[in-house]
Amino acid sequence: MESLLNPQHPLPATVDASIDQLLETHLARLDADEELLAVSLPSDDERTLIASLRERDARALGLDVESHLVGARIDDERFARVREALEGRVKPSRGLPAWVFEPPPPALPDPSFWWARTFPFCSSAFQTGWRSDGLWFTGGPSSHDGSAKFSRFGMIAFFELSPERMPSSTTGRFVSTPYVDLLGMFHAATSDYNFWQGGDSWSKCWLHLDQQLFQFGLGQDGPTPVVHAQNHERVTLVDEANAGRSVQIPLPGRRDLQPLVVRDLAPADSLWARLEVRFDIQIEGAAHLWIDSDAMVNTFHWPLVAL
Image (cartoon, rainbow, N blue to C red; front, side, top):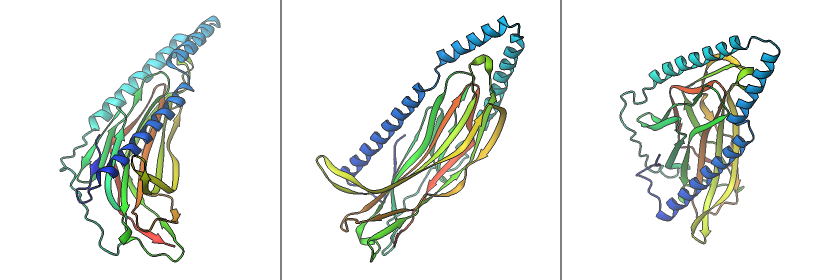
């Protein structure tokens, strides 16, 4: 999906191109990390082999394999019913008008970061778009069996604090404390541990909150970000494994990002903030993790405070 730009906050072409490069590099790294994790877990073929060996040994011991296989089919049918019900709830438009939000620059001497651009992203299991109440996501991954499957959704937003609105500080130190709204509900389901189909049933989600403060310096090919500070927080939102149940987990609502302190800023240059909200999802075996109806992710202006 394309970035949403603030028409009141046009960016120089060179800065816009630098942000594009930042986004491309970051998303490529996420893809590479996901691929590395995937190859460290049992593949579909390995799970099938494990299942066939277990079934062979169980039959050799005279165990009632058929009744367990019937149980697995019942699980499959239950998951299909739940997914059909969730798909019927997906009505992301709600009849609301399209997003119209064009905040002008904060008035002097307001030291707030001014929104410039937001880039939403999501795997093919999800849908996303803009409504008058913000950025929404819907959908989710589902699996009847097999190896781990990965997906994600979220957004990266950029904000600018221009030098004429920078607060004065006798120490040269400042703190940034942004917050986001995360609204909605997850619906997660796993089956019991399936000895006959190669193992685990997982439904897991981790929330990543990242804040980076940087200024643009001169690079060989144009503006190059000079990072002054960054922090990253990972929060477990869903951790269902072999539970044989369906659960609903609400998103946390208002969420403060960890405070970030910077110093030794170039006084003639803007200070930029990059905020990332990302939901990393992993399911395995007979499992699903769906957004129940839709989820909202919204950001806001916030001030830089002198220390």
